[in-house]
Image (cartoon, rainbow, N blue to C red; front, side, top):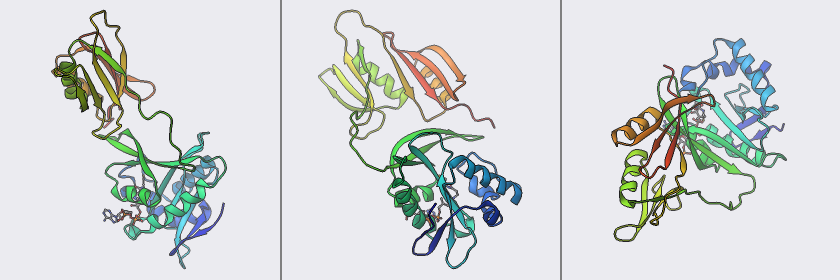
Length: 297
Ligand SMILES: CC(C)(COP(=O)(O)OP(=O)(O)OC[C@H]1O[C@@H](n2cnc3c(N)ncnc32)[C@H](O)[C@@H]1OP(=O)(O)O)[C@@H](O)C(=O)NCCC(=O)NCCS
């Protein structure tokens, strides 16, 4: 593990014995966890234990930030637990009395460049709550871009996280998006229902009346989504489409009920931490909706 320097900072490998006391100002601060699942540590010993566990889990890849010439640790930046993948999770945090001075924005680009030069690391990603604008700013400074969204369940509400990521060797992927293709008897009506319930966007439609329509999960060009097309006169083979959502599953379920759709399976918690239900379109197509579990609060 290398020690690195930036204009104002020294980035030194974390040592819990040396750094726990100073970092307890961060790990014990409830405001540090506004956008995270963990609880504040109760004392320096608990902070020491958490730091030791982190180092054991991530193979030692955590640095502390020091504002030269001061040798106190003001924050940390490093990898998450090693999950055996070449895309590694990244996290950062700073004592609140040093927020807003551009310190993490200065540290992150140097650390990310260093990590992406390591053998076995093909990319780094940070999961950042959409409301954590400071942290999103840090990610952008380190040239991480938005790649995806994930639902996030807090004790009392549901939110979303942006997956901000950067590859060691940027490359053009082969598949740009997947789009199930639904044969239906009434293209405009099916589109109306899917837009109303799932909040999809009409990318374009063809024909008057439309015989083909493309619905996107977002309003942007190239967005993944669902194609809806006129069925030939014959029998329609039903398909199942799985939809990942970022709002509470029960809210989506209520929308489907209000739209008069047939519910094939009511919302149920799955052991893999999702909550799912299934509704049915007129032609027999099934839409399996997979969303976040309910807040526990
Ligand atoms: C996220 C965190 C590390 C940011 O550290 P920081 O040193 O304060 O960040 P910076 O000063 O480099 O600023 C980062 C961005 O926030 C912006 N920012 C600064 N002050 C701000 C303020 N008062 N309000 C909103 N944004 C602000 C900066 O302009 C910068 O964005 P830019 O690069 O687009 O200009 C720090 O706020 C923190 O520890 N938060 C709690 C833990 C946490 O949320 N960790 C990340 C989990 S994903």
